[in-house]
Image (cartoon, rainbow, N blue to C red; front, side):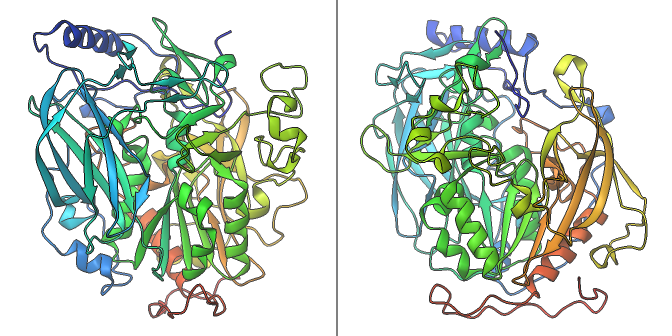
Length: 585
């Protein structure tokens, strides 16, 4: 049976048209991609309004919250827009992945690259930030490289010619196991951030490999987390994801045939190899960098491996759609909150599924993401009953179910204040999402709203609320002092009347916890749409939402600092509090 899971996010084909290169293999790829471009998908809509429907981008005034930070100095360096791909490039002709999702200055990482036919290519490494609006800075290039066919995948062709691929018929795990194509040395002076490794073939086709440069010794005021587990969970490269088996010619996901294990040893299927980074996450990154905040970066995998590093920072910004957490992540983030680290969830549907990390077939740690998606209420479903996960009989607390499921019994709202509810109503036969207003709560304005330009009951239209949203739940664990900043009536994709919330509360440690309650929050922080984004930024920034986020960051940075601990020997100076922002409750 073809099924879409309640929290599912459909597939997006490339907007790029491949050229015919004169070989049979490439012609097949080109024809297949054209089929994709003209065939309706059961899945995530393109969300690309016609140019006439797009509003004129509005320049945002971003306050310099910390003007002398390493990030502020980095963004004062000359930037470039050359990190963007040529709009005519075929992102499937050349593809790749790295042997790590993150690295530190001084490390070396191995890159695995495959092309449809043997071809020379260049590697260009860009750090993504503000850089005067250009969005990137070139750090290094590697020339004269040769990409050889090691297997390729597209929405139209499926997996072709991957003799090295390890395919597990029981779990549907696909591990590409390509040969190393290049080794990248991370510069000792590379500032922590999001880096895009651009694979530029001689025929001008191109794609990316994303890499986060972290600094485990950093005591930056803010640490921002990139949701790489969720990027991988939704990737159907090889035709399987944690949501189903991608089939042709219907371009649908068969939910009952979903993978239960997925590998990081494969490219991301969308965003020209960046997963969902270009849809939502890049906008928050650009805003953080533009504001000059003292920020460093990490990933889900790093929080799983080294959760205590959070104690070095004052604020954790969890970016975008961070749906898959391990128990170690959940415990580590809770411990950070208990020690006074504030949490800003600038998205929705966070911490929904518990996952586990396993080594790959070669023994490399944490290269396999495991999630059987079992549910205690589906004991008669052979694909979802609890016993499907072998861990259920070993340690039920680590069973890969929803955190709110009685098997685990750790509802997300105990930490976030609210939790995932649903997807907004769909339009255009499932290809789009209906626009719902984000509505400021009535009554006296909260301190966080002062100076933002937002008034009680005010509506923000067209692109802030969606595509997934959170709400409050009466399950006995919602924090008692939860403050509702916005309560927005919405209709779910199932037709149910619902309300999406934006909220915050102050924990007993003195730290603040904010939940935007909408995946599209980042669209309010930036007026840019990357050319390869699976979802276009249809809001193009909103000054009031930027102001609110700035108030939030300042309130979190000036909240009671965490106690001195061994993990944070260096004190962090917070900026001077704004005289217009009174203390929060």
